[in-house]
Image (cartoon, rainbow, N blue to C red; front, top):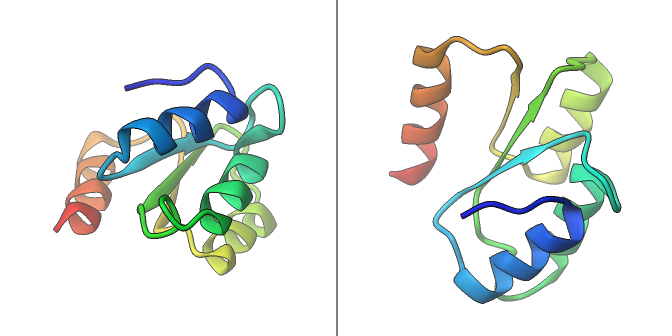
Length: 92
């Protein structure tokens, strides 16, 4: 599944209830952090693990999303082994 922006991400997540969400920090219409805030407020989506991806790996942004409850924050470009390991840890 994929979504163009933060608003569509929330809509798709509510409809499909995915096992995991990969969310970019920089997205149109609310951005990834805004979409995540909405996802964790909604009963149907609040327990879906979210892993952020960003091409702008500022430590304060990573710390913010992890403090909010994200299961990881991966810098782009990423090493495929690290990416796979982070996903596997969260899919159980």
